[in-house]
Length: 86
Image: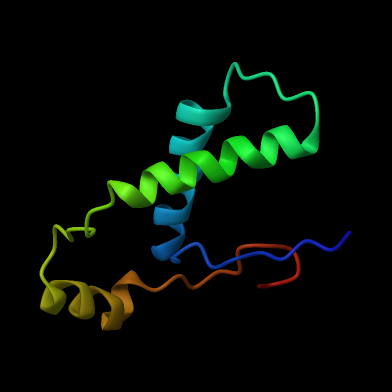
């Protein structure tokens, strides 16, 4: 097994993490899946339903504010986030 560390400032990962939380709560938790095929089918049903009712993500910050924060050196991390300095 090899672990890959992602940047702590990877804000797009927040969306992925939120999706995994939602699918866990709404489709998987307290479920009974005797086989991998049953689990896969439950996930696929959830994703199909999710896509049927999807809506665009609405950012709460305007782009100029986000870009200003991203380019401001005061917001950059100066220390490595793991022993391998990733």
